[in-house]
Length: 344
Image (cartoon, rainbow, N blue to C red; front, side):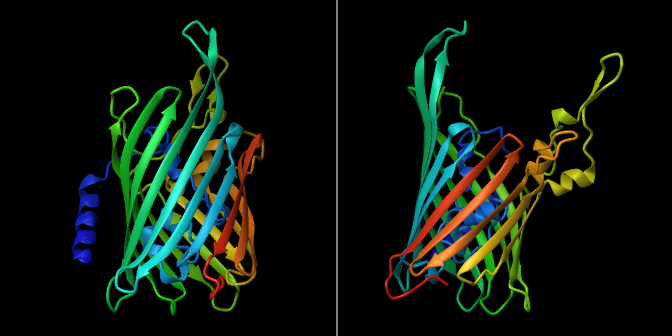
């Protein structure tokens, strides 16, 4: 019965995919990672098997090693925005398997309100909240896993509120005896139940392929994500790259086929992935292309971080470079609540 349900939802994916990309839909915070480990590896990694925050992005990675693991995450995001999440996984029974839950909260801080004439009317707040429940299923006698997340979403701006529901579906190939893994994930298939103004908006759907490979003789693990498979053309001209002639005619940046292709890629590398101390580095090609400046080395798109394990606690840190004038730091604390085990 569980197998039929998962296959049914995977069929829905193939009938529901629309061309969407960031900046054109509501609930954009659903595509902001809150895991320091994931952010340090580029922000879109899908194949991490031993991080309890990862099932939020790929429910198929939920496995027995995450039983009774808790993760608290906080990001000092851009422009005074605060982003945090709480993740927990538990094994219901040997027959039923694993489930996880996550709460993600985004606080935009205090915003100055004004009317049409620009006269200030006072301050107001805005925030986003999502509650996620997830489940994974291992097909018998195979190394193939399928997973599903269900999300309940609330967004508030001043006195306006919006509610929505969404789901993630994923399939994963993983074997502990193989150095590689592959996964396909469709995230945020859903709808608004109540919109802000009565006009329904799209939810930010993403379809992505992920892979990982652990080198045999070097303590290094590579991660690759091909993102936004639901939309090929991600090219948005960078205003800093436009040119003008003596007559003031402006020519927009022309983005080549190869440049657009690379905007789908995120790569990451983790040094000493199974040691007490891990070092991580990631690069997001799309972010780098859209935030670069002419004649200035901004290092946008680069992220890095580390992890330190201390008995049943693990501290992860990530630093993300967005622009020469802005960056973000993320902290994650993982706690093993089962005193009989330790982190792997």
